[in-house]
Length: 342
Image 1 (tube, rainbow, N blue to C red):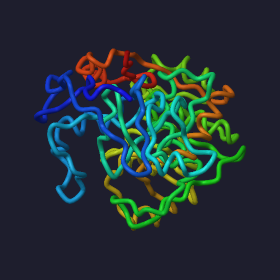
Image 2 (cartoon, helix red, strand yellow):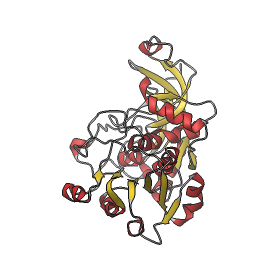
Image 3 (cartoon, rainbow, N blue to C red):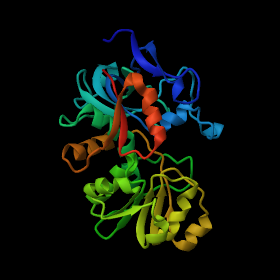
Image 4 (cartoon, rainbow, N blue to C red):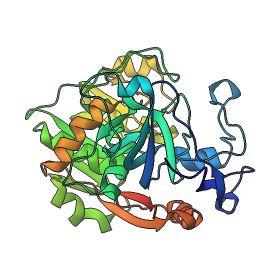
C-alpha cells in the first residue's frame, strides 16, 4: 500500500491558473466497488478549468458538488495499487493489483474526481485495461475526448437524460454514403471524431485554422475548410451530419449546411429553435459524456491497432499544472494536453 500522503494539485479557492497549488494531500481509500490507482498520466479537459473557476456561468441546480479543497481532473492512466474486497471477489475479469488501466472517472456525477494526484480512487467500471502497446500519456489523453466522440457518433451507451434537452440523443448510422463535417477538428474531441467517422466509412470535412490542414488530412480528412479565410456555413452544403465540437450560441449557423433529414450535434449545446429545426428537417441533439469502461476498452483496441491515434499537444509535470492550464487558455490546441506524474 502507498504512504498515507501524496502529492496533488488542489484548489482552496476558485479563480485563474494561479489557484492551482501543488501540495501534500491524503491518499484516498477505495470504497465498495472501487480501485485505487497509482497515476502515471492525467488528461486535461475543459471541465477542469470550468471547475477551477467555480463554474460561474452554470445555474446552481446544474452544478455538481464542489467542496473545497478540491483536487481537479477526471482522466487518468496508471497502475492498480489496491482493490476493494468486492472487486477482488467479483469475477475472473475484475482488476487486480498491478494491472495497467485508464479511465474517465466519476463523470458527470462528480465533475472533478481527484485525478491531478499521485493516487486516485474510482469505480472499477470506469476503467478499462490499458493496451500494452499504448503508453500512459496517450491512454490518459484518450479518455474523455474519445468517449465524447464515441457517444456522439457511434453509441450513446446509456439512457440517462441530458440536462440540456428532453430528446434522447441517437447517433446517426455512418457509412460510405454519409458526409460528416467536424468543426474544431484539430482539438481533443474533433481529431478523434474525424478518425471515428472515417473508420465508419464516411466522407469527412474538417474545419480548423489553416496551420492544422496537413495534420488533419493525414488523419483522413477528405476536405478542409480554413475558418480564418472563409466561413464554413457559407461554403459547406448538403452535409448529412455536423459535429460542432465548439458548439455554444454560434452553433445554430451550421443549420444551413445540413441537408433535410440530416443532423447537427453541438458538443456544447447552444440556442436553437425547435420550430426552425423542424421546418428545415434537421435533428439537433446533444449528449453529456459519461464514464464507460466498456466503451473505453473498444477505443483502446482501435488505438492499439493503429485505426485511430491520439495527438499530444504538450505535456507538463504534475507540479506544473498551472502552466498546463495557461497553455489551454491560449487555444488552438492540436490534440490533448497531458500531465505526467513521476
